[in-house]
Image 1 (cartoon, each protein chain N blue to C red):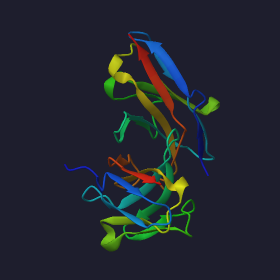
Image 2 (image 1 turned 135 degrees about the vertical axis):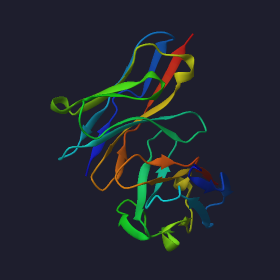
Image 3 (image 1 turned 180 degrees about the vertical axis):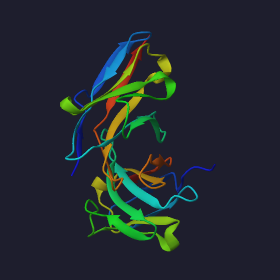
Length: 112
Length: 112
């Protein structure tokens, strides 16, 4: 079965600084990869997804992620973080049955 | 387009009691998922339905958890009897074929 590792439990960045959240996956075939964001008390919202094609994926709210097969990674980036980006971020990997496995999440704190 | 609906939003019960959660997926979505999200962790897939058939229930604790999806639309998840470690947010999601999963707001269960 597929699995996901998010090495950073908690990250703090200053508002306006750049952000990179790490995600490593394990899956025997070509994975479907997702990043979701969860604000306190809210459901999960999709930021972006990768199924095939261009390995640099653009998402909502200015986020992007790059699929690197050689490193089994799908890191999330944003050039300039806003205070409203403070939330929990989850990377997920899906199979061709669309069953997803989520990472443990990275909590983002944004300093003024 | 209406999103995934879940009820109740909150539930407090005592251990050994029973509880049921309800989910109404997005219209036209054949696949429905139930996840358990324990505080500080990523969502864990409990069961996946394709129409009214079970695709994956390998992580469902079948001695106490059960789920059904009547007529391939609404679904209920039941816990009987509940244990303290069942305290979590129970998320329902739906998808159209192999694609993005749309999540409901979740039901927060507290077992005392």
